[in-house]
Image (cartoon, rainbow, N blue to C red):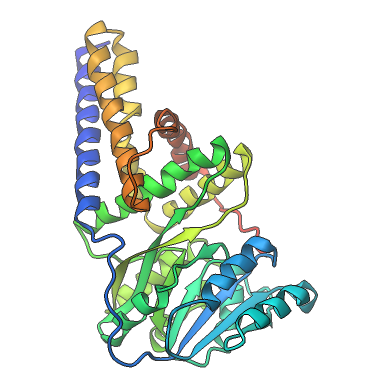
Length: 367
């Protein structure tokens, strides 16, 4: 290997280590999982929940919204493709379990654009009765106090929206454990890393809370029905209109069924393409933070035995970082059972990054 390439790969390895340390530091500074007591009156809230299906997992997540410990009026709108999709027996059981609250099932047959989820949200929002609106993905299981934490900040007129992180709960199988490293360790800490250099101007997909007037001013959702990264673009509009976007320390669970490697790969590729659409520059530069790829490339290109130890140290530091960040996300001790998947995830991430930059469209299967 030429001296120029040796220096180049050495510099890139150093950059990756520095970015990893920065990511670690940003995650430690954020008050993850902290709560604030609910003070003052609780305004009415409308929850918009587009459903891909009405299976057991979706209904379990819906039950999480019905069991919210929120003293104010609560309207829950569930969007389904047609009345035939309504699980009447399950609806009856939910009504019996929560007699003081009910779900309004709204058929949303209109396909307003390529983005089916935004199309459903546009139809649901028209039926919202309250000024505070919370949008939830179908697979989100909220903690009981979620509304009590994300709604009060909206009383500040300078706050445009509140959003919060999701974690992949109870991954089953190696494919989902691999995917969980991206969700539970890397993504949220990357968001906090970027937050240290500029204000947040995008929304996360799991949960978004905003005032109805802010959503109307940002022209959500009918003008986003052909947008591939609707939440990111909505965040851009809210920030452009002068509203700040708060990252809540509350974490919600993302409940996914057992997945094959192909399904997990497709989800990650879809997400990488969404990030490319939302933040092309940041996504393109994200390859610089790969703490496995650059040390291995440095080692393999030089074939020098002197670089074996430095490369291994870099990879061990990366494994420790990922396991530590995942432990923070779950408020538990570090778990190294699937630590060997971390370098594999990093190498596969290079392929995902490359494909996402080359791919022109992102698949939208729902509904």
